[in-house]
Length: 471
Image (tube, rainbow, N blue to C red; front, side, top):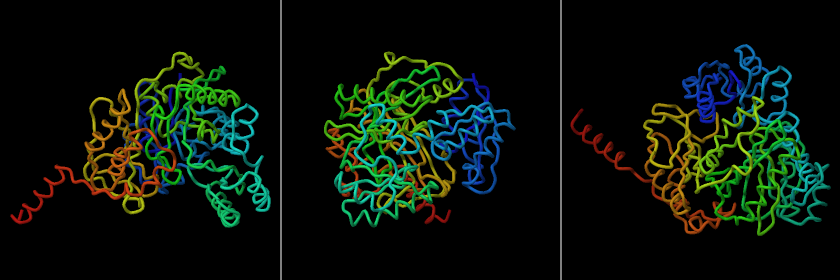
């Protein structure tokens, strides 16, 4: 088994990995930059080391992180999600220096990170892909010609893209001419590559992803699906497991496709295969070669500790489960509580958390790295916590989600919590009928009044009394 793991990340996912290590008797090493000096992952890990003043550079320096792992006697590195988690060079450096990378092999990361190679691999494996370019586009002329062949709308995508960046929808030749140089520019700045490809735009699909696990013995299983259709500008807001929109036959078929995809590339460790569904058609979108932000809801419905499995697989152990061992029970929702103001075009709301109280009760889980007095830095993703609820039925999980959102106290910053209450109240969501157009199609959900909890009102009254009394 692994002895000591360096966690090449920050925030809630770093805390999540620290906890898994502690439960397995594995020592954990945190890294941090100056803004994270008082981060919860720094406080909770067995050891912690500074990467300097720059808030970002240290987290994106593969050589420095690998060297630190070697200097501190770590036999493995867990990359979490984001940062270097899908960086093939980072995984390769680990391999070259004898440090176990807790994720798939570097060649698999490279192949799946290159969207055209990923499409080619899936095509060869018999996994359906959307109509589009075979390889990268040579120039605008080729893009215009292909768009006429497959029909508008089309999607321009950065070959090395991810996280909703480097993607543009084009509904006409005029839009394609405008967006083509923009995608190339964005791809170059964000990913260091100007390569782009094209695929047919599937209008208003359901976004379904399947959690997979693979080991070094060639075993691969799926842990059922998650519905990620509630999203804004390609960024997920609320995730659901399992999807309330799939039939048992669709669920079995999509799970089988995900396992086929995993075996086709020799996948090891945890990952996710993402699909677009429209009507009865299913299309491969991409493979995420890392633990997902929303792994929590899969854990909730299956009882499988995914991060624990990651550590076991990385240690060379076989999967703890066979496919026939995996079943699911109930429904789970994950709310990404972002430090953003939905009523102000989701403007980031960074600052000091003046009061934080986590909701609790049966079927409620919170993954976070914030605490009362914590200063949310402006340099990173705006997600400050993940609220997860589980219940036996769809109606019950919605009710539990509403209650948990209402119970949560997070003062000092503005968050998306109240907005999510509006989504849960919408009849289409409650009926389980939604796709990726749900959020942009319902701008009226932003017309809510900001709630003032009784505790906040009491504090305001006390402050007023104190002011008049001259305290």
